[in-house]
Length: 184
Ligand SMILES: Cc1cc2nc3c(=O)[nH]c(=O)nc-3n(C[C@H](O)[C@H](O)[C@H](O)COP(=O)(O)O)c2cc1C
Image (tube, rainbow, N blue to C red):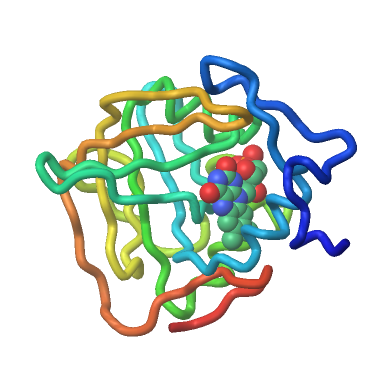
């Protein structure tokens, strides 16, 4: 049996999640991560600034929720150093990277060993209405105020009302697929 064939009944030690009213049996987390690697997704840098300080991290778990009112969600691991700052600041900006954004993506994913506010030494940064850092070269930036937070499994799901958008240079965008950056 390959990893792709695994169903809950096949899992010897299936993980359990408690998000539903009753425990639900799932595939193994490693199987889920392998499956998700086949799902290509746009690459964003999620930033925040405010009383809690300034921070940012790379994220693909970003999704449109509603256009009236304009709302999106981001999923952030509670272990990320950015998570408590987003909670305290109550604001974030989703900066969608262009085709040349792989270096910035690696910096904000912690792959270069740079942490905290030092990550902003790369790139040109602006602010819009929430004060969260806005990457000038982002193909699009969504400046958001948090309206709801849900804790699901290992992650916080932040729902953000979109206060302002800024369109940067157009052109190809960066996606992450099969554990590699690609340009579309
Ligand atoms: C392409 C890519 C996408 C990522 N997407 C997410 C994501 O959606 N949510 C998340 O919590 N971490 C995501 N990560 C991991 C974070 O960027 C980061 O490495 C991890 O949360 C540790 O964060 P910290 O260095 O800010 O503490 C992603 C990493 C990469 C390279």
